[in-house]
Amino acid sequence: MIASLVAGAVATGIVVAGTGRDDRPPPPAPGPAARTVLAEGPGAALSAGELSALIAAQEHRLAGTAGDHLSWAVLGSAYLAQGALLGDRTDLRRAEKALRRSLEALPGEKGNADAQVGMAALANARRDFASAKRWAESVRARSPEQWTAYPALIDAYSGLGSYAAAAKALHTLEELRPRTVQTLLRGSQVHRDNGRYEDAEALADEAVSRSGGRAERASALHRLGELAWERGEPQQAAAYFDTALRLEPGHHPSLAGRGRASAALGRTDDALRDYRAAVERAPMPEYALRAGELYESLGMPDEARAHHEKVRRLAAKARKYGVSEELTLARYEADHGQADSAVRRLAQEWKRGHRSAHVSDALGWALHRAGRTQEGLKYLKRATTPGLRSALSLYHRGEIERSLGRDGPARRHLREALRLNPHFSPLLVPQAKRAVSALGNPPPGGPADVEGEPWTTGGELPPEDGDTAEGGERAGDGGRAGDGGRAGDGEERSPHGRDEDASRGPRDSGSSRPRERDARETGGSEETGETGETRKTGESGESGESGESGETRGAGDVQPSATTARGPSPAGG
Image (cartoon, rainbow, N blue to C red; front, top):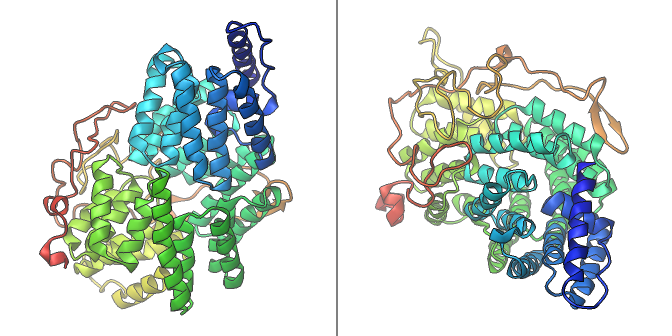
């Protein structure tokens, strides 16, 4: 109902704006697809056919009414949605042109929130999260009730690593736009980033049940598939991706997701076929990198090398359209190319304010690979402290600790990586298993904390980004004081059976909520300062522009280290 009211008000605005310019009759009211884009913002989920028809209609409409700022905003948002659906980066350039035409017709400070929200979404699509934050916060400052600004804010804060600010933005979005599909999916994202996987899955499951169109349902099913993959259940993940692809056969995130799940299940031919289809549909470096690593794990070096070269080409092509693929490119360089180059790339990302758990993980690993292991550990500690539980990050931390002779923490983190997702990488899982075997069991009669102490207020990292110092729980993320709002590091999720429905994919039998995990099944949580290290000033508590949660962050004033700022040290080769 709210969406209909918003759409009706905006549609009326379009007609009124058209009648005052000359004696021509007003342009027709926007059709259903245009109203959806206006009501839902750049995140509106439409099919490829609907988007193509909408774009053609808006271009025809604007041929006669070039000063119609709302129609330009609709066109720009439609291009954004089409670019995301089809993986065509040229649509981002078209979207920017249309959105800037909208802002020329009516500047943002005079009330053109639709175009500003579109610019925020465009910046997020290009992974320019600092710019996205500025655009969306500008809308929020003038129009706090403009709910379409909050999904863009959540994406921007998450990309910057400001997880508490993202949670606060979600709280406002839920008040303004409760139980809609877009709100539910953003809520699933925020809960997952804060380690509450049961809540994340419940919200994604509800999004499936509430979704109206095939594209919208496919997006929600993809989210469920990703959550199943991250908890180490490739068969359930594949079932979700299958269902999404039956609804939208060209949904490239589900193609790539199913490829990864098929590889884990030993169906390598199916996996490679899905990866090829995903790259053809959306030439993204991440898909090429996954395929290359699968070929490498299969002992096919020529095919692996061809895909690794494709990673570079696709990243360079994306750069032409303003899209940053630095994180994927740095991950490739760290493991398959020049680790020093990866450090330089990620140092620049850090300087831009991109300090998410993913960037922290990649930077710590790149420093280790460049021979700067002690520096790298600091960033891996940061990457594994937030609620997000990543098997890859835990593996990276365990290997770094093993190389430093810290066998207890290394043993625990490597084991936890394999417990969390025994299939997290076709290349690295065998290495993780060999490392665990080499470490063996703790010696008998040793101290009680041979595998590291729990993470507490006296731990190795100070609270940051809205984190509280009480029990390691994160502020502003909706965590409940007594339910394990921040899961223990050794936490292991129990598998649970699901039934498959042709339209919804696997579901819990009897409930949309999965079984709660029992913290007592876990192997413990993060160790506390085993070396007595403290973080350097500049790695937390930076001064700079203030986010929604009130924390202060620097955007470009901090280098990973003095040596990183100048480039690789001689010790790094």
